[in-house]
Length: 144
Image (cartoon, rainbow, N blue to C red; front, side):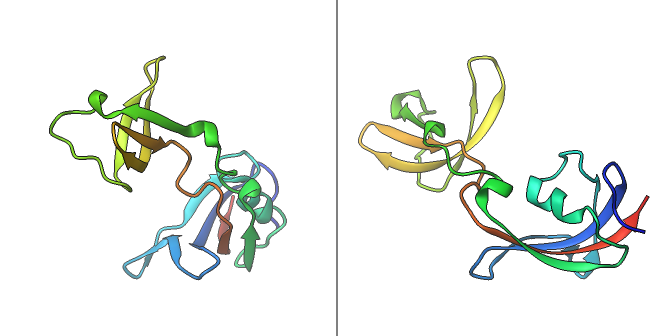
């Protein structure tokens, strides 16, 4: 049996960067917590979704995804400058800190402080994995 579009699948995976550092895995503290999703439905990143189609039960494979197949390239329009005066007075912004903000239409978004200087900060609203090549070791453990 091979994975087809719209099949419900469970997949064990380990995601790593090109340097070998692991950024995510379905195995936590020696226990497997497979990722469950509908194949071909866009519930996971495109390259991962595409790789699953045609795999067989218990098949393992390694895939390499370019940013365009994963979380996209880093978008410079998502680098937002904010006056330090608009920040809570009791906060001392530092590069790397995560920060929540509200959009004009009321949605809550999160970003990472990318730069702090003089009277402003720059907040990066890109996905933290945007612009990165990603590698996944995947294994199909259930097909329904």
